[in-house]
Amino acid sequence: MQGKPLNVPADGLTTRQRRNRPLVIVHTGAGKGKSTAAFGLALRGWNQGWDIGVFQFVKSAKWRIGEQTALETLRDVHADTGRGGPIEWHKMGSGWSWSRKEGSDQDHALAAQEGWAEIRRRLAEERHTLYVLDEFTYPMTWGWIDPVEVAETLRDRPGTQHVVITGRNCAPEVLEVADLVTEMTKVKHPFDQGQKGQKGIEW
Image (cartoon, rainbow, N blue to C red; front, side):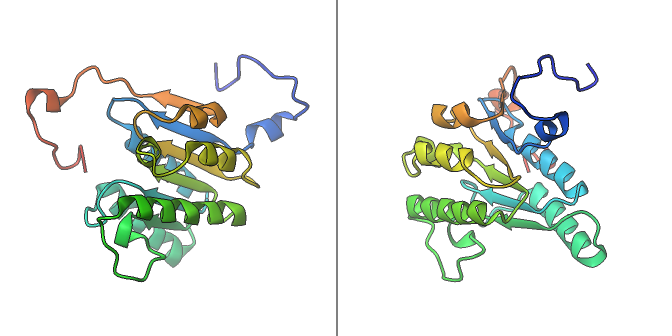
């Protein structure tokens, strides 16, 4: 196929305009690899010089995954050499980088709502080129964040801002406005045989 689309819509757009339109991408399903795929996309974006914002919604603010170290190293490379693009990494609760107060991890719902409010502000300001909303499906599933509001915000966001969302059971309202949806299907997993997560594979 060489990257050629099977169908060309009669939308009045040029090939260049259609190619460069901003995307909402969802990695969902029960299989492994949703976050891994999103962070791989962040690596591509960094190479293109994009401004990247990563927002982790579930993992503990005290738990540091390997992708965070790698992307923050690339952030420093950009700051020191100008190569690639800038990267910000924000975590839940007291880990939200814009919150200077000592936060409690007990009120996860409030933390998620504050985080989503910050992302909405950034989208309105066209702050980043790529937003990675890691495990963002769960606060919607748990009723902490309104998926209808999320879908409307993503649909109406200005400029050229790509958004990738990861997590199981993505809300149908968000799937409806997404441009690219991939469902990871588990066939086998070492966890099924009682094997715990290991370095370099899970973190």
